[in-house]
Length: 363
Image (cartoon, rainbow, N blue to C red; front, side, top):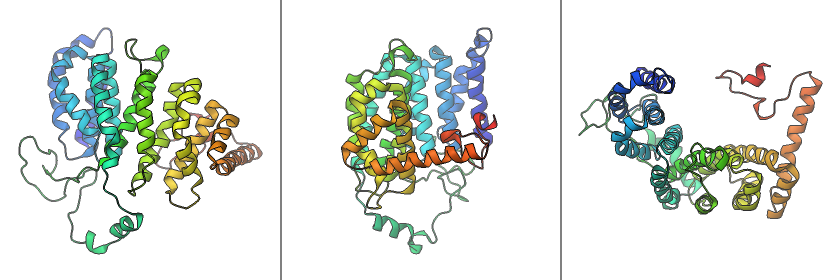
């Protein structure tokens, strides 16, 4: 927790002092030293520390691009490693940091990021096949989970075991160097977050973070086609997790692309998989992916029009009834809110009991 908070504090320095017109120069002499501290945190056994270090380095590159240039090769290597991490939030924040790097360094960095994206996006094709029955049997096998190593909270490193690691190794409370092997599908999952960052920040010429960086259709369409194809695979049980990530990230991607580009080029790439997941006639999909598909359908329908989206679903031959049922549930929620004198706030109507309500819920 202390190292995680320290990384957050360093990031806040870069965000608030580094962007201040009067005080930015006072932090400049210390950027190299702070980057070295953050780079050490990339080796931490606790994933929240690695997560925060990743974000902090991206923030520094935005605030002090010249000062960070000497460490950029090392940073890029660390970011791309984190993009395939076993923890989904680490993968997502690595994508955010790479987006910051593109915003800081322009077309040259974009070319490097696209190279990584094209290489890692199809990685789920290499995931070893496994049936759901085999996966469930493995999860419920008492013998496979008895007498194994106990792991620390917030870490994939073993608990109550201290040992030296070669080189930098893992640092932290136990200085361990053991962790779970990465899975190929996790690399594809990280690429979904990276595609989201590139689309949200650079897909629209008028709203791009840099005038010289624009994700045109000639570059983006092959990537999105590959993403749609690899997310159709179902020879491994975690494919549902991959599709869940896709449905959660597709709405912001669609918003960034705009109605015209979405309807003419990109929606048809995903509509058949979305309809299949939404309907799930054979009970193969997880409840998480079904819920994510429903949320995705609702948000895209709001963007391009319910009638247009309903027509695209109907053209696939499935999903129409499930979508109608989803929209009927939303109408019922609105009516119940109106009858009780409350205010319906759509997808923000419900929130986690472990977090504060959103601003609209406090109105």
